[in-house]
Image 1 (spheres, rainbow, N blue to C red):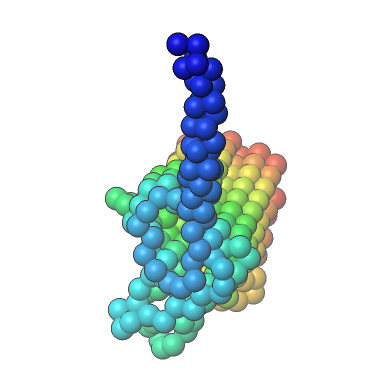
Image 2: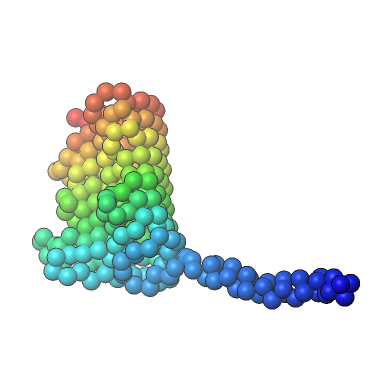
Length: 253
């Protein structure tokens, strides 16, 4: 009995030694599962973290298409400073193209950040709730249907150049620190119940069109924004209950 008792600590130590490498390997496997690398346009159908590892170029079919189509909830895409390029202007009425899209019934809690998108009809279209779009540089195609960013959630620190596209940013939620220039329809279009702080919308100035700089559905909090050179109105508030404070938006003739 004494001899058996003496062997028990040795057996426990051997068991711990055998199991330790397996546990370490499992932890390493978990680490290796993310972020997943994106090397080409594709459908993302699993939740998780993704990152671009090179520039992407999208060639649409006759009906257009989407470069990165998200069909899962809770997906984060880091462009890692790379660029997603679309076809640009190919004809008078080009097909509808989208760089990154998550449709309403398929994509909740989507985040997109840190890179450039150019030459698409729509840069980012996130139709679900709880999205984050930040740190993007978007150059739209021409035409009134072109839109830089569409999202519900948080849209911050983005730069959108229409040259001249239709709408720079269309969002509901917290919209802050964005800069939008040269658009045909609306620089920044805001849904009801939003917080809109520190954005800039600069229109086309003397061109014979009348875009709206920042259009907001009330009630919303609209503070410290700047809107200039918009013939259709620099700051247009629709409805009652908006907090309109410290905005630089001269009245247009």
